[in-house]
Length: 210
Image (cartoon, rainbow, N blue to C red; front, side):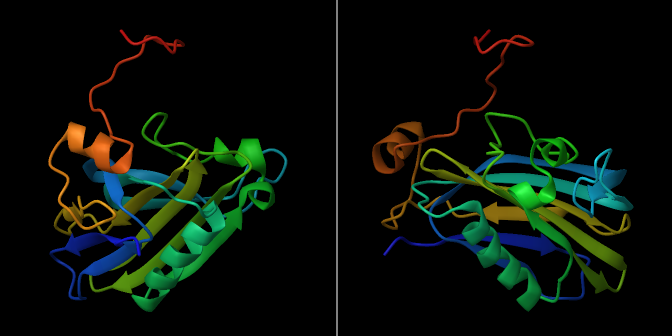
């Protein structure tokens, strides 16, 4: 059985216990970034011809992308597993949809999603969820996008927390499916068949590395 990768989100100022989400495979953290205070727009309706209804929230923002090696399921299955864990942790869904029902191409580009190669969104196979939880400091929002490309699953998470909260620390398992610690790029390629490369730069509008 493939060893599950654990994603732990520790909100140090939250009175609730740390949130742990489990992915069905070995996950690699491809992106992690934070903003101390910002305003952020979340689509909370399907694409309605000229746009989607947007929910504007303010707070500290963290954005993370995970790539799941050797994932054989689809985006809906990946989302269902994560949504169930969020609901068990006290979050409630504000809005959820899948590819065509979201509005396909138009809805995809209404979302603020990290670009390739960090995050891949298959226009025919993606799922979207906005969930919220009421905590002592205010309302905590999580926006999830799941998709897949080739043999990989992709998870894009944006968390917007009350601005006076401490930054969110994110820890991701770096264990391979057989449980061995992956130490470097060569071992990632040998054991998983994939590896994330940092600091790749492309010329604008080009697929050629600079």
